[in-house]
Amino acid sequence: MRSDAKKNYDHILTVARDLLTGGGADASLRDIARKAGVGDGTLHRHFPTREALLEALLRTNFEDMAERASALEREEDAGRALVLWLKEAVAMTHSYSGVIAPMVAAIADEDSALHGSCVSLRSAGTRLLARAQAEGAARPDMDGNDLFALISALAWLAEQPPLVPRADHLFDIMVSAILTDSRDGGVARG
Amino acid sequence: MRSDAKKNYDHILTVARDLLTGGGADASLRDIARKAGVGDGTLHRHFPTREALLEALLRTNFEDMAERASALEREEDAGRALVLWLKEAVAMTHSYSGVIAPMVAAIADEDSALHGSCVSLRSAGTRLLARAQAEGAARPDMDGNDLFALISALAWLAEQPPLVPRADHLFDIMVSAILTDSRDGGVARG
DNA sequence: ACCTGAACACCGTTCAAGT
DNA sequence: ACCTGAACACCGTTCAAGT
Image 1: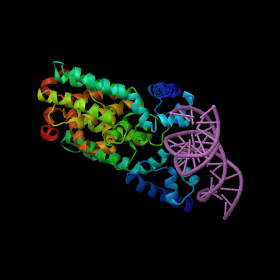
Image 2: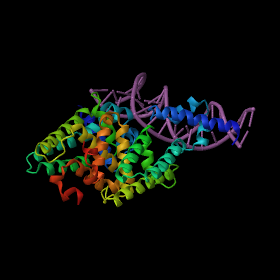
Image 3: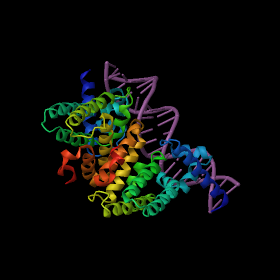
């Protein structure tokens, strides 16, 4: 990539990150281009779709979550590891505004720029869930798809301003449904 | 209302209902006006915002849910009554595409055309929840706001095509978290 | 190679002109 | 009273023209 192109690419990403982590889910691509001081065409060649831009923004976050899952697989308490990871996954997606719906759409669309990242996230969760289930810490009638859907729903809740005050509590309630009663004890019900 | 105005009003509603119950969440107001054979201005005077149109479409459904709650309050099993009503509430909102986000926004916005309907829905759920809690059938650490958020999350799930296959199962899982274990037994975990 | 910005087909919304 | 449809300021996207 030419150096001026690289500079534009990086600057667009910086501006987009500032806008989307600042709650500006409704920022248009033109807003981003204008704020970055580039033409509309420049933004569209670097990032052909909004999803492509999100993918570039979120790639490292998704990789972090996969690594985090690997680390948590060495945690003694498999149920606790699953819950910790869930909390972090929800917080990660929530740190950007307006990413949940594209993420969910991407899990079923192999052509989406976000597809690979979503599949990785689901895989990481599936591993932690399977381990918790093998130890009897999590209910056996769930799979990685259920977990992905649950993360999406919780992250979506946290994106809706009127529901934000309830998001943490509902997280605890849903966790109590995932963990088997013999293990969670006061953690989720407390 | 003049008879030609009344005719336009009704026809717009019919067309909008056909589009929104047919999965066309992305139908623009102009699409609806065109399909109804009226000018853009006509649609906007009858329904100043998209929310106003949704409110006119959903009003009877919300009223039905409030009546249904009253009927279910006379059901013997308070836990079962709550679960039945939850299932119907989710199905009702799900029967129209793209209504969940406006509904959630409206619960906190007293100026929204949808506000009253949403508050009624929340009240109906609160009554059923309180009765189930009084009988020890539902966990005590929840209120009507939590229930409204839960319905929203479940309805949102059912609106996302990739998550649809999981929606019913997640409904059962979440129900198992609401009902106290002494009561639900095999219902939710089965 | 890469960038710019006008252009296109859309959107929600408004408003002068008609009946 | 009510309706129409052009107009406005937006949007995502494309593409000829520049450097």
